[in-house]
Image (cartoon, rainbow, N blue to C red; front, side, top):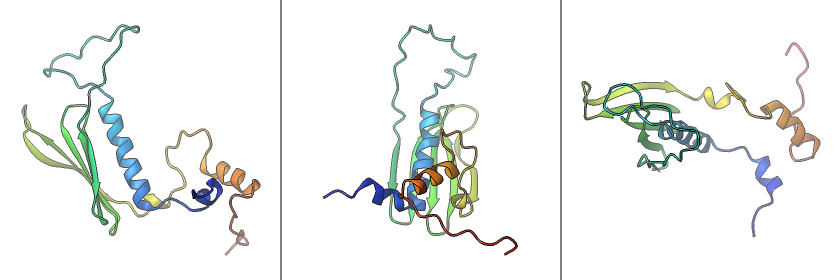
Length: 153
């Protein structure tokens, strides 16, 4: 027996689900771009009618209940590792390269993400912002909005 869609919509996704989806989204953007070959000038723009084959980035994702690891390739061809600590709510991003002037592993960035998970939207270009969706769901009886606090409290 499958749960009804309305029951699923009442339960917010877990932070682990949101983090994994976000990390995969970042990786997908990197994989969809073609790196400049040979370090020279960029290749000429393809003919608009020409088919461009998609090349697999060899990405992987795994989790052990606490840590989520997602690997892929960025637009420069460097291997990228996203690590998310779901207990301490931390994100770290590493890049590794074995060719060119830079060889080795380097920390690209890290941050605490617990407050990021509290955002209802940031740089959101969706058709419906969170507030509008929340209102629509409440109007259809799929979501109960919390009572508003009196002003000044």
